[in-house]
Image (cartoon, rainbow, N blue to C red; front, side, top):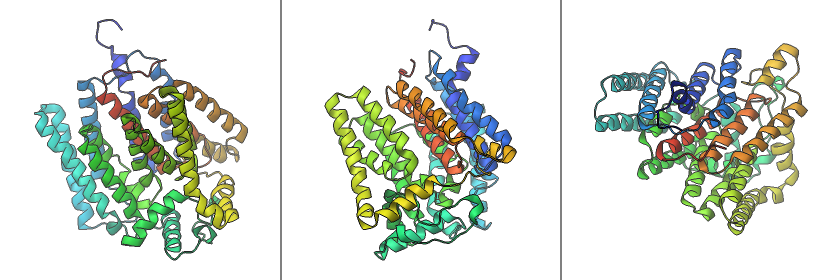
Length: 439
């Protein structure tokens, strides 16, 4: 670039990650991840701009640009939470009203910070207050919403109870909560790492969600201890569906800390530790195979042949060990519930995807062969772009954005995962001096 500062378009392009996070947060707050054509169009434009974002010469957020944009968005998200915590199974109470009021006050303070530009100390106190309030609310969610009427929570509660009683969770026949028309599975469909972790919460405190709460609190404490961007953490803590996802007991609540510590291990070049975290991620959920492959590609490009081979073998071997007890115990039950039944799930007309649009308008979901070709094409393009941790994050956003936008099932937790990866990407832009993302 020349010595001149960035143009207006250049500044907007640098703000793309923050704008995409605003689109994600706003869309999920309005829809809870269910089909809405207007929001789907906006989301699609947000993701489709990503290749154009990469074509620019300077992707780094300047300090002033990041400070102002993150403060504004954090204030707006706080004001969104002041209108409702999105705990749909929590009864309105004095406690929920207190939290909403506090988020309203913090949101208004955030707006004043942009207008009056106080000292950095004042801004940090505001950010710490947001993080602290979020941690308290995380801890209280099982109390505020003790029995969410959702299959994910019920199935995990029953599966963890079965494991505690030394019976095979993958042999359970679970209740039909919604009927066959939405294509739910009726066995335990989740991979074993999730089962191991949730069973701890169930055993100690009778609610599987405490496992995710503990993991997230550890992640937040580590983030602060390592003096990563406080503003980025505050921004994530007011992501509008933050508490909704935990209330519903979706797996992503446990997935995010694993991703965080895996990427931290990569940056610190603690390859053994990183491989172990990756093995846990691979054994958490079926869709994380894309994350694993992109990480292995990163390792091949970043490390020597011996290190990348060891990393790949350790992560695959660790995942196999996590699967092994269930393959030995009852292989057919495990494969049926976690692979065959999941692959046979019906397309959902209420999902936030273009497959739902086609299902509603033409009674057929997105054609499978086109979907596979599209995902494969984006994946191969993304694989070429992976060079460092920042590009690894961005390419995961590209791949999962494609998988979800055109998939037969895509809901709040799916896009929540992308939101967290985006936050980690924004954090990378904020803390590093030079971008290596450009082709």
